[in-house]
Amino acid sequence: MSAHDQVMSHRTQVVALPVLARRRKGFTGILTGPTVQKAVAFFSDLGAVTLSHAVALWILMRVLHVGMDAQSRFHHHRYYIPYFALMLSLIAGYKSLELGRPEQELERSCKVVAASFLGLVLLDFTMFKSEPISFYLTVIWFILATVFLVTGRFTLRGVYGMLWKLGLCRKRVLLVGSASGTLEYLRLLRTQRHSGYEHAGVLLDSRSLQSHSEELLGLPVLGSISDCESRLKELKPELLIVTWAPGDEQWLHNLIQGCKRLPVDVELYSHVLATANLAHEPDEFSGCFRFYARSEWPMLVQRVLKRGMDIVIGFVGSVVTVILVPMIYVVANLEKRGPLFYRSAYLGQDGSIHYYLKFRTMEIDADRILQADPVLRARFQEHQKLVDDPRVTKVGRILRKFSLDEFPQFFSVLKGDLAFVGPRTIRKEEAGRYGARLTRLMSVKPGVTGLWQVMGRQTTTYEERVEMDMFYVDRWSIWLDLVIMAKTFWKVLKTEGAY
Picture 1: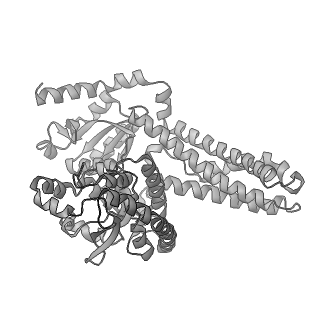
Picture 2 (picture 1 turned 90 degrees about the vertical axis):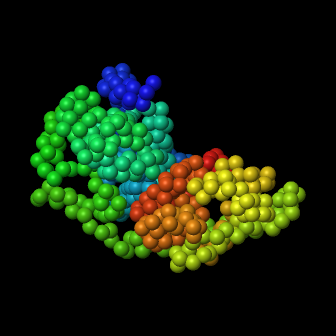
Picture 3 (picture 1 turned 180 degrees about the horizontal axis):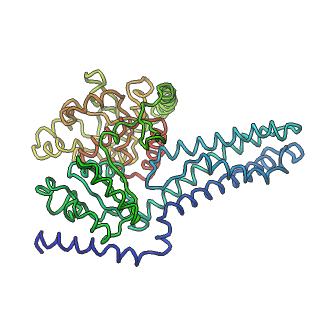
């Protein structure tokens, strides 16, 4: 089959999407709706709060052996659940799962539990002040509610993530705009491994059609933006994403009004706003959105917390490394004698060369072997990593599989040269591949783990690693670090992406 026939076949499949989508309607079709997703999340939260209350009471009675007569407010528990239901619905910030990033989900979850329990304590002082307050019950309940609620929400995200990967519960999406804007938008989603959309195709402006007449990043080009109205009626997508607006705003106005009548949701993508990471709120007088820089003091607090976590993690990791040293030394030297550590060079924030330690996993003359083999050297220069690297020893493969070779880096984390979470370290010769973005990369400490490690690790391309580094730098928060830490622990347990 020729390339043209393949594209036409692909377009025929896209046109048939509404028929296939109707066949797949049912239970999974119902789960796609934002109202159902929000309802499921709400009842998950409510169940977490209820279960945590029951477990907290069990701990008090069975573990701490606190008598029921010493537990105040027990007979008022029937008021707590409606109270939490009200608080969750008011401040939980429920939104469709494909719209919320994991770290923001974590932040919202922790804040809603904290605000709810603060309100509960104030309620106790006003309505039940004649009775003693069960401090233990409140504290244990708060801790368990936070854990259960966060677990419930991320379990829900995991379930939807699996369904999306199976091609279920996805929203059908039609993209319209310029080739450059569409490419930026698709790369941003792929950087985050977003799979909640089923892209039906792309409609491009006349200028973009000249260079992208058949496909764009694997998506079929269905025609010009002038065909938008007919394609919307034909494909019946649930969401229209506009990645570029012509100078004539009347076109965009007519498009939005047409989507409103169908109805089809509309999302407007702007590269400037997507990378600015600004806070925003609607101006109800004009209907505009006001964007402003985030307050500096919360970020200062988060940076202090980040360094505090690095000190704790660096200390614990350094202690574990000291314990591992004699065992790994003996095992490694049974295979081949040589130094235990390898000094790995990286480009520091000051632009000079720095070093961190790793347990040696390669032959002693690994650098000489690389320089002597032009094919191997070319592969390394392209990806800065090698699959099935012949220089790695048998013991080294085991260390890499379980990420044990990384432990000496905790000395650098404790010292402050590295962060536990951050962009990946790069060699001096890699700096040119970042171009103008190198300054942004150097504005933060490199990390032992980071976004690219938990999004595929060595299975990602070099270009994807660069995009992930920039994504982390532009959108850093302590919540993003916590999500990456949790994913790192899970990836290490699964030995995923390591070689």
